[in-house]
Amino acid sequence: RTMYSPRFIGELFRSQEMYSVEATRQIFDRLAHSSIMRLNKASMDKLFDLMTMGFKYQMLACRYPQELVLVTLNHLHEIRKKVLRSEAVTELVDCAIRAVYDKYLAMSSAGFASLKQAGSTAP
Image (cartoon, helix red, strand yellow):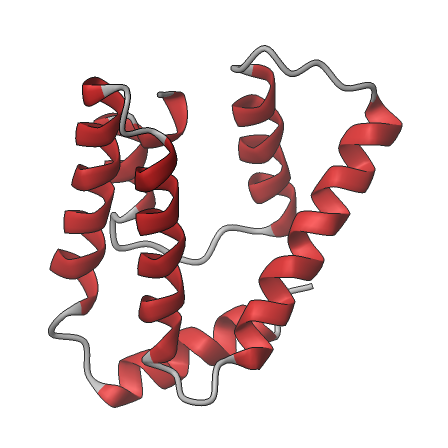
């Protein structure tokens, strides 16, 4: 629920500079610890590195910049399938899906290219 709360999603989709690695890590730590999951520092470091590598792979695997949105929507729809038993969580994921459409539906090709470039060069 924390990951898809309207406040958190609103903050993610607010126009702003890209998060630094340190800020991303801080968000990641808070999200992980808001659940029942408890990891020591070494395990958290490994999990963050794995998630970072997965993100970079997804970025590089996109053949064209607009595919970033399709990958994001694919992930969100898969998460939605897993939470169907909880109507409240399903609604939160639906709001995140709508936020993706609202933010990126009208984005220009140049905007997508810039987004992909920024994400691909992040440390």
